[in-house]
Image (cartoon, rainbow, N blue to C red):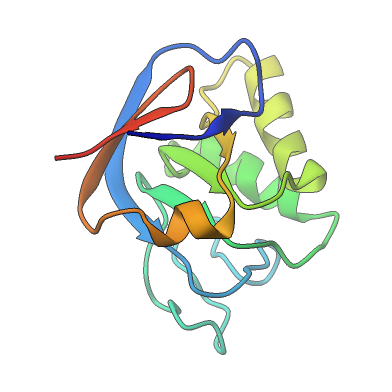
Length: 137
């Protein structure tokens, strides 16, 4: 059994989705199209893939204070990832989740899962419980 650390103690529910394990850090600002969820950072190994509805495993983020606004747009349009698995908490990105919740929208739950744990994620779909338990076939 694998377990991730919930980054918001009041997260509720269970989410399921296909794993999109990124192999390089991502900048949401300029790296993700806020109207589609597609990775547009041209030098990113997963450029062209869509993060909408995925369990997005991020080995890191490339900072921009506008990353939270891009995530907030994705949440507002209902094309955000189903969940975020962050190797290290990214406060600026997580602000998008906090603001989305305050706006009454449904932000993705966020968890900490180090790079070694991310490397053990299977291809395909996984289920994440609010307490951080990760289930897969």
